[in-house]
View 1 (spheres, helix red, strand yellow):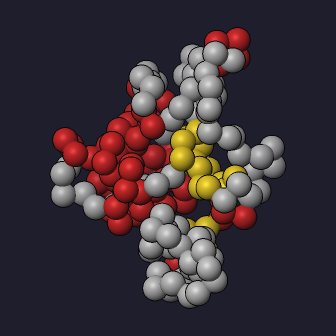
View 2 (cartoon, rainbow, N blue to C red):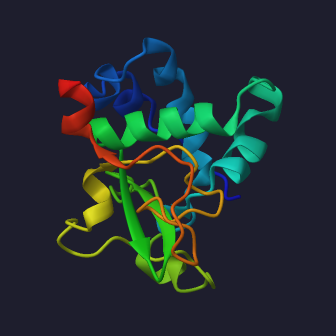
Length: 164
């Protein structure tokens, strides 16, 4: 996990961070930033995120709690969620501003970096809320890898969630 400097002014004045509900989730963002690799992206696996971020700050935090925080970060535009070759990734929106990541020249030294979202940012995953059971053998459609229906909640868009 790479070391990250946090842009305090950007963090403290973020309009996106201000939209996060419940308010307690706002405190998690600074703890998630070190998950970004040198290019600003990271692989999404809620068990691994929980194991890396929460053992000290909140040992009782579950993978489902992590999913809820993740969904909220995606909803307000702090993270872009995308799928590449069947794996789920996220990218911290705005992390590419000068001084937040290694320079392009330095970036060439890194091997095996996660992919970046496509140019359009319109990957179908970007507009979705992660279903329960995501990361536990079910793909985003709620089907397991052999095509049988899983027991996870159906995938819903944020608009569906707000109107219900």
